[in-house]
Image (cartoon, rainbow over all chains, first blue to last red):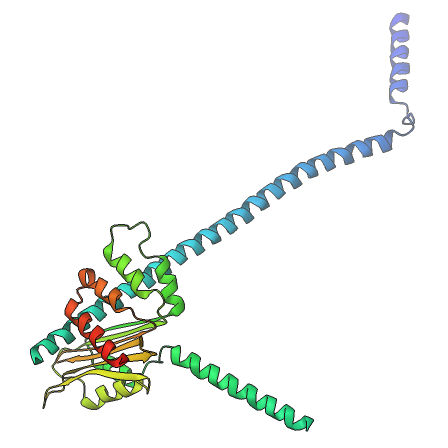
Length: 107
Length: 195
């Protein structure tokens, strides 16, 4: 009985010690905050790199697409101009042929 | 005295600009004639091709490109080299004589100025159809060709500005169907005009 009581007292003493308010070691707060800041900055840095890579890819794709569009558009216009020249020359040759026929008939 | 000099300089500059503008205008393709609009309204099928110097040069870049066997392209590229403009109108009508003699005369006058020499003027009495061929000769060199051909159901107008090499036109004979005789006739007329 006496033994139990002593054990209980010992337990209470340990419990009091465990829950007793103790001052944090000097500089702990600043170290914790610095660590948290470092982690945040590292995360932000990685994100920033990926954002830059993504932005560069988007800009490159837009510029590449625009250049390709311009190239295709130029080819389309060139082919249209070529067709126009050939049409003009065909009409010219047909007209000249008719002129010749008319002149030959008149002879 | 100083004031007179300034006025004289300004006058000289004005004259120079006017002369330069006139010279440039002579090289330019004409603006479409109002007659063309009325003809186009009546026509069943219209083909209009207007190519200035820049457009011809641009088209030239796309000719004979990876098409070594294309004779039309090769001949056309050689033909358009150095030209200042090509202006072609072709009107096809459903009925005969959908144009008037006044319209033909209007077109002729609109295109040809004093620099143009008539080479062929062919008409049949009582018929509207006919053919006109004009050459623009500068120092004995052909610098322009104008053809106005009126058929019962078709009216064609061809204006080519720039140095025209009749041998190159002759080269088109094979691929574009220009009769060799027509080229010979033009060359003969060119020689006669140069005399």
